[in-house]
Length: 213
Image 1: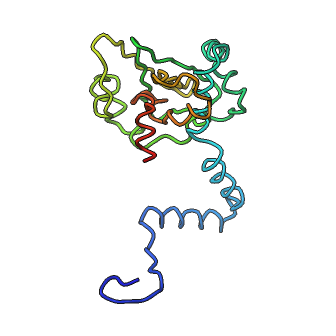
Image 2 (image 1 turned 180 degrees about the horizontal axis):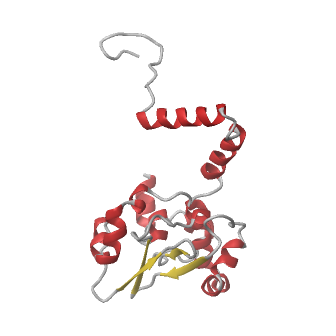
Image 3 (image 1 turned 45 degrees about the vertical axis):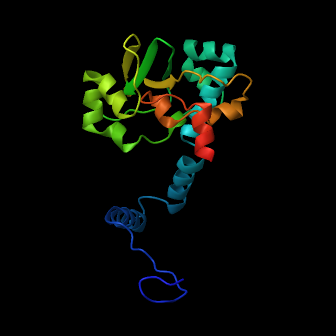
């Protein structure tokens, strides 16, 4: 395909970024010294790429929306209820679910560092670990929500939960209107990572349709 003023059919290879080069150098050094096993690294990457992440939390939320008994179980013992899916292990041992509703909106932050429920949300986004988010989520939660495009009515009570190494939180967003009769698999498409942290609300059916077009 012609480009850059010349014609050829071979591909150009973009050089890795500085951070990628640093990571590769560190990995090579650790492997060379026998401190890590490459197969173990590959297994870890595969696990967090395909088996751990927001897709797990979406299943929990969709089931809570469709199964009242499971929803109650989440309220009574979130760790056990989430573990029913097999989502257990590091960073997910002690879980609490908080539920959004017409008059209550929950927001999760870790004011000390970046404690986060890896088993249901995967690795934390960069902004979650940033100092401005960690401080402002407590001091000005409505302002932070507005920056994510979430504007709440004045009579909605905003509750901020401080995640710690001993306790991590999962927000069950309010089920969008117009989803009666939807299956759990359909509902999962409305749940986003950010809605399970509480900075946004779940997507509406209209937003889902618009994203697909």
